[in-house]
Length: 91
Figure 1 (cartoon, rainbow, N blue to C red):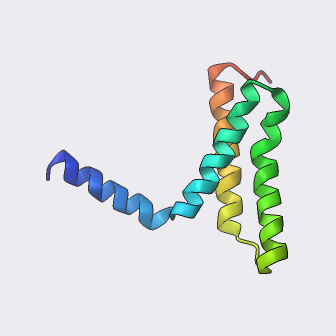
Figure 2: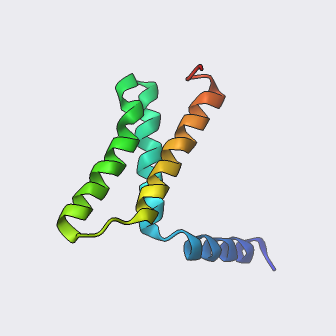
Figure 3: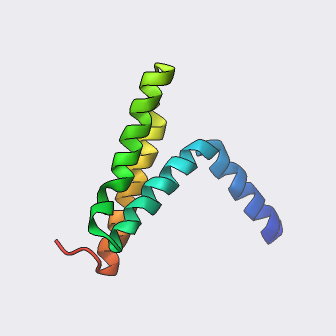
């Protein structure tokens, strides 16, 4: 198996487990939380956007998607961990 084929197989495995919409929730939770390095109130932006988006889905579509919620929270946690390991956050 060539390297390209192994990358394709890895991509298919990731896409089977994490749909595109779940990846989007992880990404915006991660990216918005990382912006807190430049302006401290944005540390809560990833969490706030995830909660507001799910609340709007509950209001408009009458459903709460736990997968979207947990992927957004995982993105926030990953960004906090990254910021802590890089020394931007001190506890």
